[in-house]
Image 1 (tube, rainbow, N blue to C red):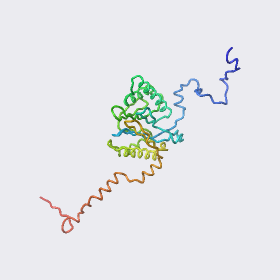
Image 2: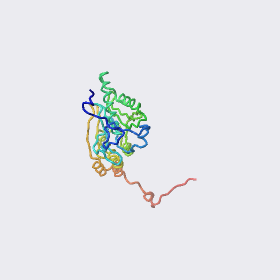
Image 3: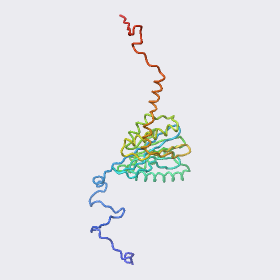
Image 4: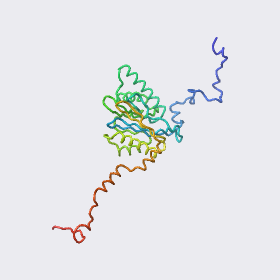
Length: 287
């Protein structure tokens, strides 16, 4: 006897209308329509943005990000974490669709763990970036949205790579990803030096994200700060972005302070009335 006869279960009428929502995975598009084309045409277009940054300096790699997760004009979560640990010496910033980023970082952690078990050691930061880039490139054109900066320390020292969902992989010293990245780049390009001290690097990262959250509507919440050292990554702090921006406005800019000190140390230049005996500036011409 079948189980449906024992439980007296009947299949629901697929032709009739039901007042209940279909279960998870039960959504369907109209007959004769390609799901990918239908969702692109009639699906919701929700703008989203963020501000994440990472830069390499002599004491390791700094990673910082805001904590606002937005869905169009709706703030879905004001305190999300956009810097994801991969293993003890590797972090990744997340920008794009949150679900895609979390899924692919879970896949990356699994693959790196399996490779470590096979080979007896973890791959380098360059190897992890190449692995993630290769996996993402297979799904090019399927509306994946993953933009990440891999920050780590391996046998060659501190390393930083940018990976995008179309398979792009770049190595560099400074990367900022997200809708607030143009504002963050303006601060980073002005104050970045490879030989910075640790406290100067912390201050630069906080200042860049705080200014970006002030100008970018999709960025906000707090500023998370991470530091990848030779001994592993470290969660440094979380500061309220508005409070941090207000405090930064009260502080003088380093370049302005240096100019004021230089102006006080140098004497004022002589005017034309100070030259010559009669208060006139004489000019000699030779024929």
